[in-house]
Length: 302
Image (cartoon, rainbow, N blue to C red; front, side, top):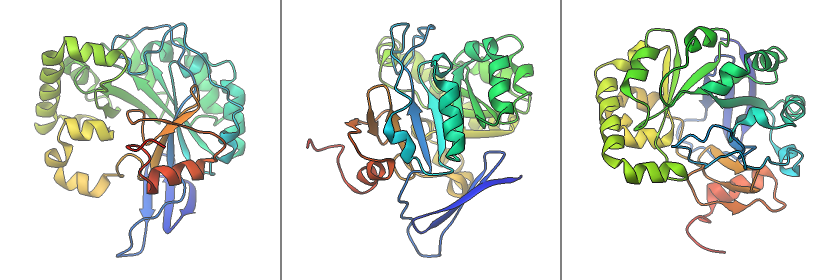
């Protein structure tokens, strides 16, 4: 591993490595008090031409792009990790210039795209990667893996396949297994078009979740280079009970503890994309994070 950055955040030292590893150091007995987010889930567009039935953002061909010159972006701290998504973030006409500005700020940009857009834009993604404008690529594979996807993933050392607990069929996990793939399992989001699917196919979602939990419990996680979970899948798949020692060692915190969400299209922010949002207003990122971290602004109306 090669170190790509380090910084002090409150009373915590954070070190980042080129393979995606993050280490935190804090004095024994102290509780962490971060003053800005280590990572931000950043939505830059609600435009997408796919119309996926489980899309939690209800993205469509009528979706709008965000203003990538929004002043809040200039306040992002160096070495913050951005998880850039949408909609289809590759469709944003200002994406390339935005990534160049973030690189000048020493912000680490990662992007998440659907596998169809990944396969259609391999040249562009290679360009962004070669120019070090993006560090990691998340490739959403909600159902059947695209032909030749696994081979193409090998060209991006920090590519991570994203699946959805309760929606991605077990057969997809089996097809992706034993190919040195990094896997991120996302929890099913009961919002957007995903809410409609959940109401109409509740039993199917439940059964797929149980199948995946059993697969992991039987050692399926060992068939990938690495397996990670978001906070939703941690709960839905009972990861703490499933992998108690690994959970204790590697769990990186709850929503809002070190992270936050910004919907730049609506100019709103929250703990995560599944939490109630508030207007950004004129605040800088550290001020928004302080409201998330220290004040209960999410259950009380101002």
